[in-house]
Image 1 (cartoon, one colour):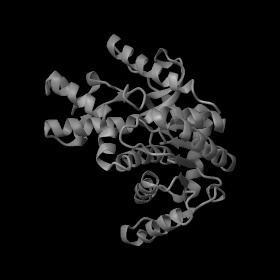
Image 2 (tube, helix red, strand yellow):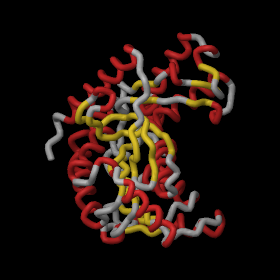
Image 3 (cartoon, one colour):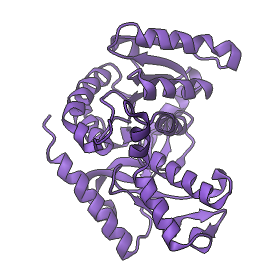
Image 4 (cartoon, helix red, strand yellow):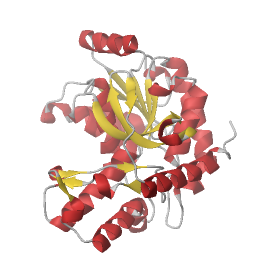
Length: 323
C-alpha cells in the first residue's frame, strides 16, 4: 500500500465527515447501516433495487438519531448516483442461502449481481475502499477486485472476523467466561474448509488447550465451520445478518478511523503463505488506506496443509468465474 495514499485519506478525514455507502438494504445491509450509524462512522447511503425499501429503512434509522444521539445522515436510494465520492462501500447485495444450499451454490447468480454493483460504485467512487460481504465471500471479493480494477489493498472481503467471532462465542460458552477474554484466529476460505488455529487460541493469554479437552475443541471447530448453516436451518428462509453486519462494520471502523486493527480478512495473495494469486482469509492490518500489511504467522505442517486445502477449494471456484 502507498503510505502517501493512507496519509492523504487520514488528512481528508479530519476535514469532512466521511461517506459510507451500503449496497443492499436487506437484513445484512440495513443492520450494517444500524451498527455504522451507532458508531457515527459517517453519513450513510443505503442502496437497493426495490423501490422504497432503502428510502424507508434509511429514514427510519435517521429518525432514531435523536434518541441514540448519533450525528450522521442516513438516506436511501434506488440509483447509484447518491453513492458518488464515497470513502467506503460495503457490498451486501446478492442471494441468501436456504437450507440445503452451500455458499458455493450461490456463485453464478451472485457473480452477476456483484459484477453489476461493482461497475456502478467504482465508476462513481474511484478512490473508495470496497468491503465485500456477498457469498461465496472469497469468490465475490475476487469479482469485485477484477471488475473494479482497484489496487488489491482497496478490495477486502469480510470472512475471518465473522468466523473468528463464532469460534470465540462458542469457546466462551464452553468455558463460562467473557467473550472479551478469548483471543483467536481463523484463516482460510469462508466456508467448510476454514482453518481455526487452536494453537493460537488463548484465554487472557492462557492456551485454550490447557483449559478444554481436545474432543471439545474439535467439536467447537466443527460448529464454527457449520455456524452459518446452523442459522440458515433455523431461519429456513434467510441467513445470518447480525454477526456478519457487525463484522463488516468493525472493518469499516478500522478503516474510516485509521485504527490499524489486526483482523483476519479475505484478500488477494501473491505468494504469502506460499499461496499464489488467490483470495483467502489471512490476518492483515486495516487502516486508513485499507489493507496496510498482510501478516504471515508461523504455521506448523498440519496448519499449512489445511490452509493449502482451503486455498485449493477457493481456487477451484475462482476458475469457474466468467466476467
